[in-house]
Amino acid sequence: MMKKKILVVDDEPSISMLIEFNLKLVGFEVQCVYDGEAVFQSIQHFRPDLIVLDLMLPKMDGIQVCRKLRSQNNLVPIIMLTAMQDLTDKIAGLDNGADDYMTKPFSPQELISRIQAILRRIQTLPSTAEQSPIQIGQIAIQPDQREVAVKGQPIELTPKEFDLLLFLCKHRGKVLSRQQLLHGVWDYHFLGDTRIVDVHISHLRDKIEVNARNPEYIVTIRNVGYKLTEPAIKESLA
Image (cartoon, rainbow, N blue to C red; front, side, top):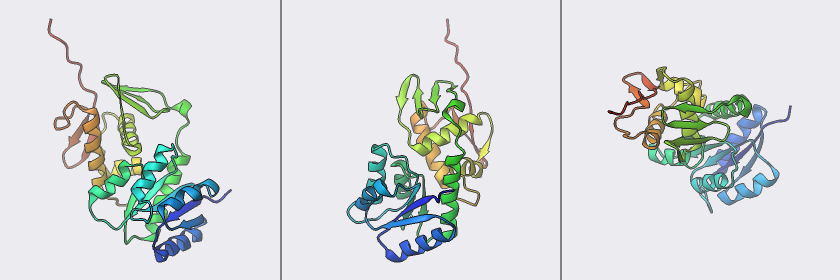
């Protein structure tokens, strides 16, 4: 079996060396680059299976790198590294195409777990033939094309917002805890930051609900988590 390739992008050599050393220990092939522009040179010949990408980089920062990759329809998974504690900055990375983030300082073992989780999830995705269209209320989902429409109007979701909506739809009517959503959508088997779920739910509601403050689809179950429901059809008065 061919080794999975990981591209590490960080301008701090000590961090790059630490990540490279630990990833090679568990069998990954690793290449390191030290600025944002170098990513686009590297992917031409190295063709990574996943990118570990620092947020603050010379020449082109991590957000710009994510945005450019996704604009080129390059769907390589990205884990963003950030020294910032502000959740808004972390979510900015996710909204621009990153699949996950970690805050420095971090455990190399946790980074490896997250890399393996993402690669495992990709390998177990169902084929397009297994993904039938989904209709819930006024929401129409085409899983194979990763397209969503509300009342016939296309809406734009980030990759993770789409994954979250699809997971909720496949478990419609069931109450899902934040940890279950972290496991199912982010594939975290350890205690993750559940605020990621809350922020993504909020963004998703803004896009699919008529009134995000009084949601009809994604309902909060207090002290537990969330449930996706299908709104009752309102009969018009004769």
